[in-house]
Image (tube, rainbow, N blue to C red):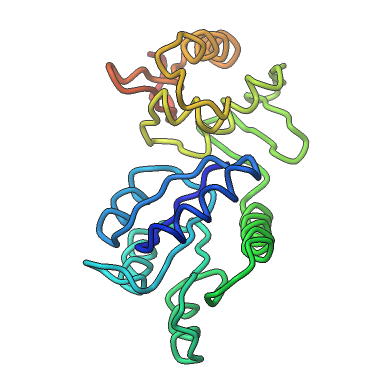
Length: 226
């Protein structure tokens, strides 16, 4: 899982990064609000740890812009500003939880697990692209009345693509989320698995997975036979 930490205090940010990496998360860190918004909108994260006292744009502005852009990534507000008014404002703007400083890392990790778990439960158990359906509860895929047999890795890749349908995802993003290894994006493992998926889901000539030259892949509804 991938976490974005938007925290201007470098010592605090590094403390959070080290702790989350020990919990086997992939962690990106930035120290200002504007960059945080850009990263949150361009990347794909399972949760965001957001400080309120940020240079440029404060945490409230960051949260407001993310929710206005229909970004529903779970957000944990982390700040020294502990007044009830600030907590209420943050929650009203769309934060999922609030943790005042100073804090114990164990509590931060537990709260992150909680908001990620709640977010997962709220997501639909069925992902649909055209007549391609993925049941994330039963871990089954089918087109029409034909069930598609997938290996565990093929399933993870298809789920990631379908959760981001119509969106271009880079090889680095795929390696981060499916293989938890962002450093081997230049290997051909992604292309090999994309080819396998295509052979299984595009059996009648309808194209679902599109290659975006020099970037990555996108899945979308086929427009007739392609």
